[in-house]
Amino acid sequence: MACNDISGQCQCRRNIIGRKCTEPALGYYFPTLHQLKFEVEDGTSPNSRPVRFGYSSQEFPDFSWRGYAVMSPAQTEVRVTVHVEPKDGRQHLFRVVLRFSNPSSTRVIASIKATNSRGTPGSEQSKEVIFPVSPSPSFLTVPGDGFAEPFELTPGTWIMHIRAEGVLLDYLVLLPQDYYEAPLLQEKITQPCTYLPTANKDENCLLYKHIALDGFSSALGSQGKFTTRRGRKRRQARVRRLTPDHPEMAALNGRQSQLQLSLPVPDSGPYMLILEYASEVDTVQNVNILISGQSVDPVMGRANIYSCAFSNLCRSVAVDNRNQVAVFQLSHRTEVLLQTSTASFLLYKVYAVPADEFSIEYVDPKVLCVSTHGRFTEDT
Image 1 (cartoon, helix red, strand yellow):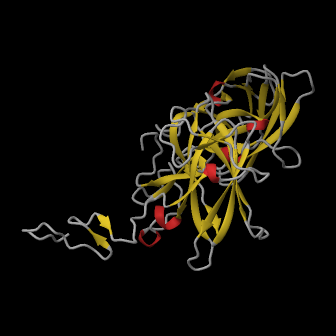
Image 2 (image 1 turned 90 degrees about the vertical axis):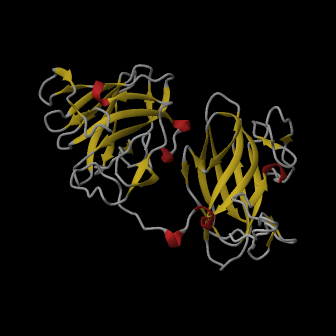
Image 3 (image 1 turned 45 degrees about the vertical axis):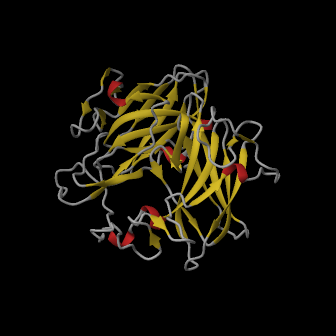
């Protein structure tokens, strides 16, 4: 920036004024990332009534505008009208950011749905949202837990349906793709990072990460017991560690084909099972899952094991004989038997997720970042 040595007046760009060019000219403004901001308390309920909102600075410090929407059993859904300005008439990607507070002691699973006000067929989009515990106001980018998934919105008016209980919502922000990306300056990276020594470590790659399942019951594969196909003799699982960044995992193969795991759950009831694993076999494999330790007869399911020689581990949900997500009735003392005759893979954990808390988001990996070294560590 060129400035006069005597007066100190700097040469400003068009429509910018001030001695140091820090102010917009009359009739102009400086845009911010939160330029497309919509107050949740200005929305409506499903029956078109005004939103119930609070305005206590102790409950929600520094709330904007009139207050914040209180999401409770008395108000489980609010609808916020947003406007997408026309540029070229095409669909554009928008990330949705929510300013919220979650004063409860557990995370809240919610949902947000976008519908076109014109009711255009096929325009409806829905995503699950995970609000972490946050007694102080925070920002969350849908779907949460460090991940971001955009909505595809055409110019016009859209209705954002937010369903949640136990959180306080201040406002909603639409972030256009041009705000958070610079497509013309980006190198297209499509290759996932792998730990294999044959990979070219000089090339950038995509690091993936799953939503954490730490709050659910699980069993470590490395702590399981193996039995041979012919005998009943049990022995400790043989484990492998692919790299120093990977955990120890049980190695299932032809010689170690049946792995017995104890999977206690806090409450008896319906659960989904998720396997977390690694596999260097370049094809889809199957493993049978037998649930016992209950009063009813043992229940059978299976899981597909996909090729997974990546820097991150992969996940697969157990399915039934119709290839639908299987629901297992688990008791406090549940035994899980994994059976395979030809598959070869490494098992890290088996998770038990309550049926009413399950989301396919737990299984689908999300891009975390572009890596220059291909290693996955928490301090990357």
